[in-house]
Image 1 (tube, helix red, strand yellow):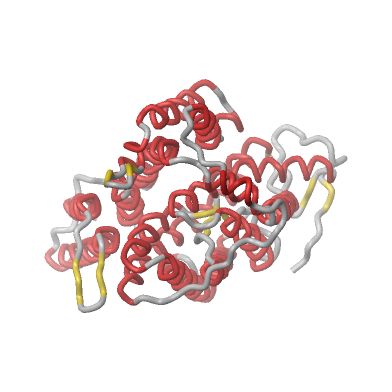
Image 2 (image 1 turned 90 degrees about the vertical axis):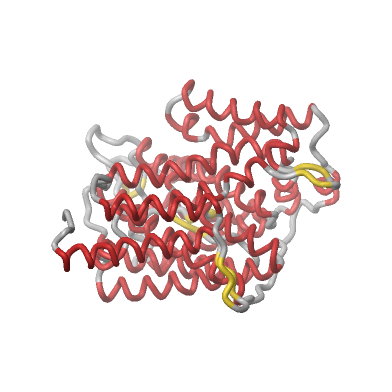
Length: 428
């Protein structure tokens, strides 16, 4: 591995039609500026996960920075990527925390990281084609979709003697937050438009402050400088099954990231697919060891690269160290943790729906033919299982809608396909 970059041109301009390659950089002031843009781009999504799951935001940011550095090292400083909090972990974390406590949820993140790292090793030596065979677009799409749609009740929230959560906690604040996100998306282009969720949260937070819904007591008590709050994992076999489907989503996201960067730079990064999976697995494992959220490669930062045409890994080193510095301020983390339920209810209404539609986008991009009974059944049955949150208990193990829906998608697709080929009824 070589950490170093060749100066692109004169370091100040990018000729039309050219891009700054991963092994190149602009002048350091411009590279630092691009790196700061990457911090802003990942900020909203990375902090939403710990805010929703009640993890410590500073700890999550710390492991996000460490994970990004790990990714750059493992991939030989050749593949630009920022590793932020994965939305796919939200549902299993909430379920595991409710049944077995936060440390058990952290143990599930650790187990997911170890399994993803193992997949990365296998892919590195066996090649990535078997992933496409095992998880074609119809299967990948339904897994992503059911994760988002399974979370829909969380966005609406619940009410009890202690109060309400989610959208119900403050409908006015939630509607303003949601409306802000929607309007920013259509009113602005470029980086501002891509930051609609972050800016919507800021607007919702301001409204909630004016309405007296924000508790600043912990912000005032927190120190300006200090280490994040590390939490040790514990292992509960009853919740580990909740996290297995997340690994499949992380595999799909990492493979998609490699393909996207390859398409934008005109280079073949397929040989790095295994390393990318291994790196994300190690990063998620490290997060699980200390109480951070599981990580994944971020599409938000792909948007920054596409807009700037700068794919230099140097910008990601700047972003990683910048995030590391921010993570060492407990006051900053306490401020993030003070986002009230009404704001979260508005933003998660958009966020969970977007995750669901991402699954549909995978179907469209993969040109899935739903006139084929195999594809139709593969999508239909798991979606109902996931949305209705079917559960199945086997001894100490309990499997929820996401795990059962994922298993159903894999089994239905491959079993129906095998029978169809045997009987000669398969369409493809």
